Image 1 (cartoon, helix red, strand yellow):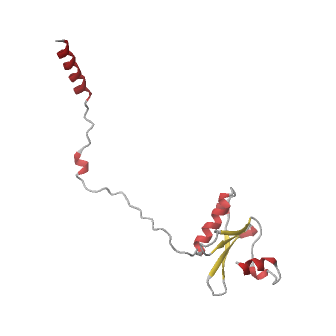
Image 2 (cartoon, rainbow, N blue to C red; image 1 turned 90 degrees about the horizontal axis):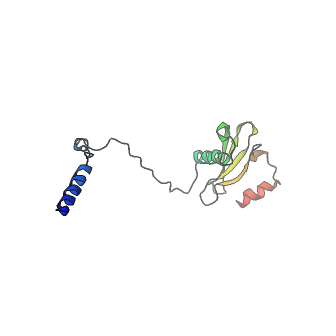
Image 3 (cartoon, one colour; image 1 turned 180 degrees about the vertical axis):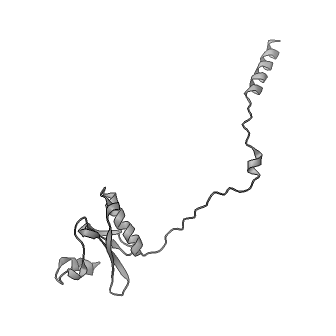
Length: 138
């Protein structure tokens, strides 16, 4: 007799623990969700554009904790190699707030040189300046 009372009590507890949290089927019948789908296409090119070089230059200063968002870019100059292919981009910031030299190919590290003051101007370098050796080697 105790066994039947225990079984009846267990069944009652089990049935009372069921709830009505079943999802509404009418929502599923409305059709597919209208959520936007974003597809990211990986960049497989081997070159770095001027726009990408600008982003890299701004990120370079932001990663060092400086106020890169307040910096304004005054010029982006592309240096080409002996066969006319882009070799590097020189990104100068306004008001002599520095420069970043970014590789134009993904074969090298993205940032080749940087400074948080002054600007880099190839035209103002004398032919015997040591930077010319580095540029020729690059």
